[in-house]
Image 1 (tube, rainbow, N blue to C red):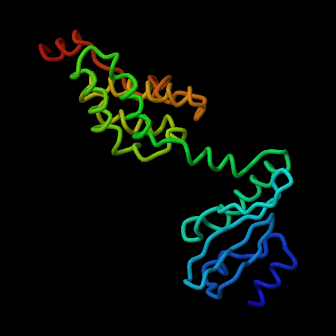
Image 2 (image 1 turned 90 degrees about the vertical axis):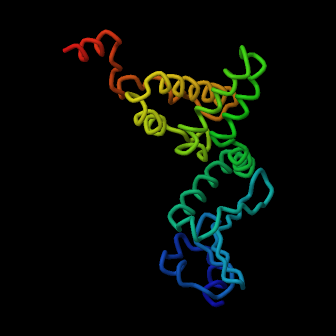
Image 3 (image 1 turned 120 degrees about the horizontal axis):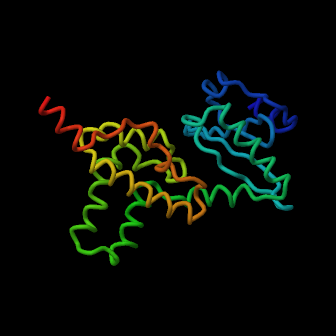
Length: 215
């Protein structure tokens, strides 16, 4: 417990090392800097906690388990939280809002239900969600809708862009519809389904395909 005790008293900057985080087994609270602590439980589990004063009130913020959040990542989060708190912001509220953001699959189902009464028939409504389930969910369904990038959309479209051009266009349009809703929710600023035409090969026209067949 000696190192844990020293950590609590001195609060040194960057006192921990990646090796120490990986090897330490003695239960305790080990300080790093910017209010960041490594918590080691008697069970052996390790997690990151940051102690901050937010708008005059001392609060502890969990930053995740040490098994999947590295020391460098925890330090980066702690620094951003400290800057936000110093500027009068609330890192706890920001964390809750980030957790509230839906995944792409959740957002797509929400949009589907919202638009369902406006579609011409059940078949058209079913096609909207079915194409997304088939081509989009396996690649980006689990991603937060605010984190989806243009590269993610390209990864969905490229395998079907030439093979199934009409389906690909519809998938792109439907991804765009979900993204527009996400923008309206304040979860993102851009629509990654737009302005990607130049990154995709041009579709052959019916005339070009006919000429190639006869040639």
